[in-house]
Length: 362
Image (tube, rainbow, N blue to C red):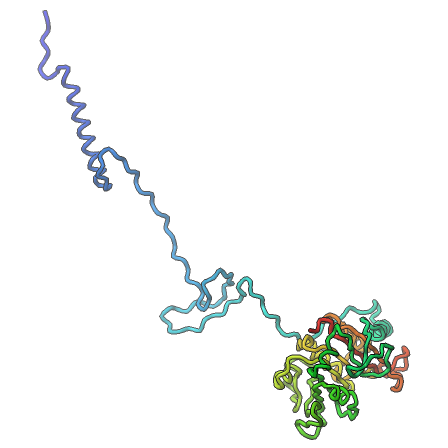
């Protein structure tokens, strides 16, 4: 006899329950999709990833350009933006690709000692050998463009007239310029000769009676002297001089850019003048140098032990060599006392005349 099933427990009850659960799940899914902004049923949109928290980029230093530059933080705190118009701070570094301008030098680079003993004998031997040996051959030397004698000359004031250095051409075309530095010297034969041959000659001597004297069409005398004091500004400021100028200042005042020949007969002031020319960095504006040097004492404002004085002299001449000046003529004056730092030694004269040519002169 079949047993009757209780009402509500038929086989169709379980599917209807599952259908209801699926319907509820579908409604909930549709609500979530609606909240996410998707109107497409059945499309699951992944939740948006959280964005990283970024700090605002720092403002560039005030006064700096917007370029890739490396700066070093200074110890000063930045002024507030509302504080008016503060003075822009200067950066410590130069932008890449721009070279930093070299600062002024106050002293030359001394050469190493000539020997371990650092003695006068060692220094004098090296120095005298240096000034007695020419470094470049000059086939034509003279005081005018017509000189054709290639034999060794005995005149102290000689220029190199080889075509490769251009001075002869400048003289012939009446475009050469000579600066002559003196201290009360009445011997102006060299200056007159160069003026007669077409050079514009400017003679600087503090003993000239008037500020500017035109002796002839091409020969000027100026009551000025080239500064021979210690080039360090702290020292120079304590000893003001009238009618004294740096060579660069004179060039600017006269409107001259180049000097074909610079002659100096300064009675022992030549060492400090030469030092000033080197430190002032005007040698590249000079074609040839003719200096009378004096060795019987250290010279104006040159001090120290005897060996250190000679080392200083030698270092000055080596600076000329590093600036591409080469010694082409040397003259030992046998008419002057044969003294070297007040001593009758080393078979040296107290006076030599040396001539250099700038091998890079154009």
